[in-house]
Image 1 (cartoon, rainbow, N blue to C red):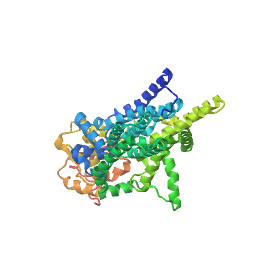
Image 2: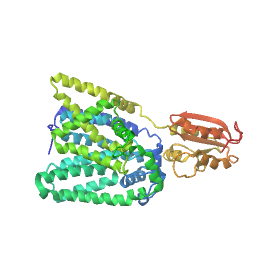
Image 3: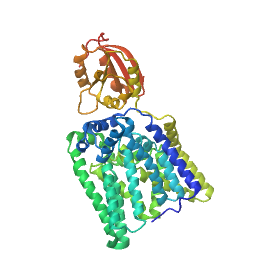
Image 4: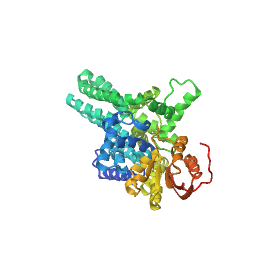
Length: 512
């Protein structure tokens, strides 16, 4: 059933849609084409792509990584076509980010009024987090696109009675999506449950056969994927210990029994408005989210439930410690937040007198979207960079002398691997830190590994990327204690030191 009153043929509407799609695409494209070095999380995932076959990607991943199999195979295919480049491994996220904008419009124009649909597209176009993850080699942008694809297909199903053949076709589509995105199953299950109950209530059992085929096929596909991909990862003690610790704040305490448990619920609401929301005025954003959700329920009960049930299933999985409700792991819920907020904002135009409603809408948009719009503009003009390892590597390349060596820590090596074609470092002069259990720096192991080589090494370049400069201070102090610094270059989140070990350092002995 089509809910929107808009026919989509108006020239003004088409102009606004085109402008918003363009404005939303520019920062995503700009961020992608910076060609910046891989960040640590991306590097940890992409080393698996480089070193494993397609079949081996079904096994528990190295460096405590977990990702959907089809997403990993897509990255592998992109590296076959585009080589070991940052552009290749980030291409699936870029395409997902651009597709998300189109899907937002296709879904919003059917669920909301004309103004509401345009507002939903406006919010999605300027969303900082949707922009960021459309330019990173991680599966989160694909999660959002997969969720919107499910919502769109559910709306298409409602257009006409579903047949068994159609149910099979939809089931196969959903079955593929669960291999590409883990959290999309919350929407397939949540929206599907609402759809099954509605059809049974309206028409009894006689129209359920197509839906039963659809969800039976998709459930079977998810079960197979769970057994061959998720279960082995959950059986890896090292990976699960790390994940449970890293995401420990994302597991819902239920029933709440203490002040801290109740505080979790309050904090989670406002954290959700920051990620995936990206709103700097969480109180105002919360008002329009709830106001819009109430409007969706008022307009059509099943539509309101489409937004609430998947959210409830995500929280249930969080309680069972199957999926954390925290940070970027909730990016896939952006559609239920942005669409509901757009519905709430659109209701302002119903206020009387008309000028008051319009003034209220303009004021709300300025308060909610001015900062996201500024960030999106800045991302287009000057895309942000996590770190600029490529700049310090270029400095080492420019000042390279015959006999020099380049020493890379594991995390930096993976970033370098995707940049090495830019430089002229001799392959036999590139030294790589021995493989450890993860990409985290271990100062004691680092010292133990390189200390025996001091006598044999002359000039060595040490490029390092970091979150905080203090994180590499001990490494640098150790190096300078055993050699003389002949070159130093600092960039955003990265530094390179040239150390000459043929010359004594400032100290001869340091505690191991």
